[in-house]
Length: 116
Image 1: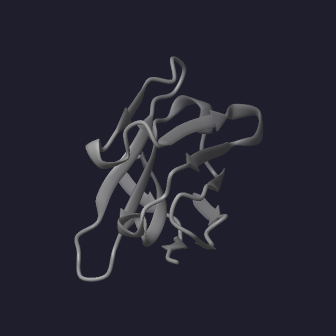
Image 2: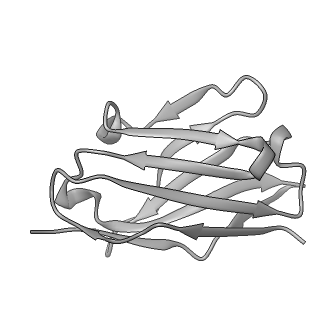
């Protein structure tokens, strides 16, 4: 049973930092690319960051390059998103995602609100 559980979302001020976590269950985590998406109200869900399996290559949306870092701890079956220099436009629900066994799996999401 695949399950993804996000945590770490919060209300922060512009310029602040936050670390999101996604705990993964039910599949061989270390062998799969993991993704972070986000969805703001009234907008489509967008890919924020991606990290591959063994070689841990990363990709980022242009809007977050230089500010966000995705990482993973395979021993803990957890993927992280370290967010710095947060902006109001980063406000969204952030989702963890994996494509496994021909299916896209999603967590429940964690709310990040950046506001003064």
